[in-house]
Amino acid sequence: MTITKDQRALFEAAVVDRMKESGFLEIEIRTECLVRCDDGYQDEIINAGWHYWNAAVATTEPSKPVAEAVKVKPLYRHKARGTIYELVGIGMMQAANWEEREYTATDDPVAGVSVDMREVAIYRSVDNGAIWVRPIEEFNDGRFEPEAPLSGGEDGK
Image (cartoon, one colour):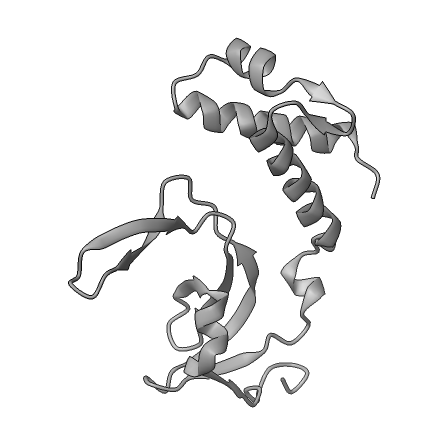
């Protein structure tokens, strides 16, 4: 994959924004963390983030409008409620300070796991149009089952 100036600029802007939230000045960030070397950065953590960023970009298909990507939206029935949802698409959670907490046997919280950049299913209720989002693992763990397309509409779908 060819690295473009736009990709590098987007990555550096994201690093600057996140580090500014922690109180760093932009000049500090650019002179101490974003010093380039070879195809990466001198700072090990920033360098790892850069290579992860590029791997994610390389595996991502160019985005298309949902209407083009999915002509007939797949329908799913929530097994517990029996309600029907159309899968709008798969997205990525972006959450700077949101962690999924784990607990010990005595219900004491332990270190959390960031949900930032976790894949999510985005789906809409056929009944009332409400939009829902949940981790893709939960959407695919058996809570939902495929449903036959609804009849009706101009093309019989």
